[in-house]
Length: 282
Image 1 (cartoon, one colour):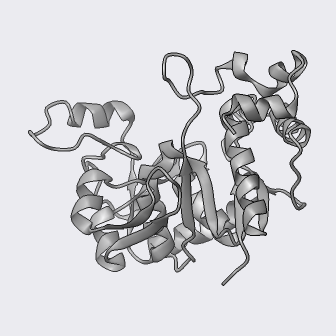
Image 2 (cartoon, one colour):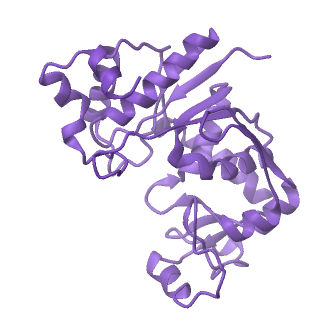
């Protein structure tokens, strides 16, 4: 059995807040309990929103919390070749097609849905297939690349993963009917960004030997997508530990706009790392 390995993978697009602290501390606590390691990964593939000052703040805040990690830190902006190789493998299998639809096109196509049809899934609005059937030979520079879910499930068969977190613990299996109707043709590559989150994260987790992914419960439904891509690309599938989310007084999960909960601001106001753990519910 491989040694335990998990990771914390923030995006440098704003300040870390209490929710990030909860996730990072949970990952490091799990690694210590398992006698393993926790890695830091910087998910900076969205160059238009990522900033070096936010990345520097991530390192500073995590070290202040008492966390350390192996060097060098993996940064998504340096892994374009690995993502291109994975995308090319899926294309070679005939599982991808180019899509020129904007969000407004998708909303218009879904404006009069049939009764009982699922409108949204873990990747947002479920794509109605407007461009399905287009050849990759027709792809233009402004096209997104989508996974043909029906074709992918014919190759993969049933998709499975194991959840170790207390919120959803158990073994999960999803068939083609569920993946086509409730997930749809997810985006693998986006205009202006390059590889999409779903593909990048499975390639990175495999490259780093992650054995258990620790992350927020808001990503639980996306796990079926990740398990599918792992199966298609012959990547090892880790276990998943989805933890609860830190929420504000209105019950909304914290986001980077919630500067009042930013770790840097709480530090400036005199909070200690122990108080951050208490505030995060640990």
